[in-house]
Length: 295
Ligand code: NAD
Image (cartoon, rainbow, N blue to C red; front, side, top):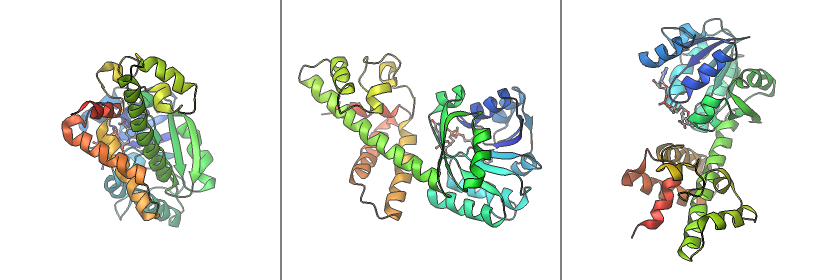
């Protein structure tokens, strides 16, 4: 069993840290929120007064923070983790952040001889609680087996995507494609319904045909086709529109930095931004179907 410092105990980090405790690891937590730390203490974690205190002498540091600026603040600089942790510690950042910052932290770690990987996740709060997240890891080949060994306590699919930053690039590619096929799925279902087809029957037809995709298979956006989907529960998230807008912004940066003309990604970004501006930020991202019901 390993000793782990877990930094960032929000909607995702809280249940992820709890799963590491359940898996038998020794977990020491830190979050700026007192309540978040207390909740983990109640589940058996030790608690530190700073990220640095939590990370002293541990086998692993795992972070789950809101954005690139938080990750840079925690890891970089004189008071940051990289300059102060034992080089034998493996550090994994599970946050969804820009690929540039992820590469910067990965390169700074490599210069200090510290094993670091960007390890963003696919799967939301439910997958974090169930321990079924998918991890996309970017960083040195030699660090991956050590990363995999601990990430297995929180997820079921763990991929080595490539060098530093590759995890964030994989996440950007995936979520851009998710947004595009969700919007396409909504348009196809609405078009069928307006022409007298039952959305359930049309879904079955497309699932058995070449239009098959993840949104149709496990997350049908049309109400009452799939009882477990957010669409059948008032579009309660699930995966919030706010987070989809964040991820599409990160994907747009990656496309621009690498000279890719991502017309479909840009269109999806603009449609999700409009949907967010209309007060749908905290609803599930499949609620984009309602765009088709506006005059
Ligand atoms: P959250 O806002 O619920 O939690 C973030 C936590 O980080 C908060 O508890 C905050 O107090 C803490 N924090 C911020 N700065 C800190 C610092 N310097 N030191 C210690 N703690 C600090 O966010 P979340 O929903 O848990 O998401 C975390 C990350 O996971 C984000 O990058 C998000 O994009 C990504 N993500 C979220 C989901 C989801 O469904 N919520 C799904 C996949 C990926």
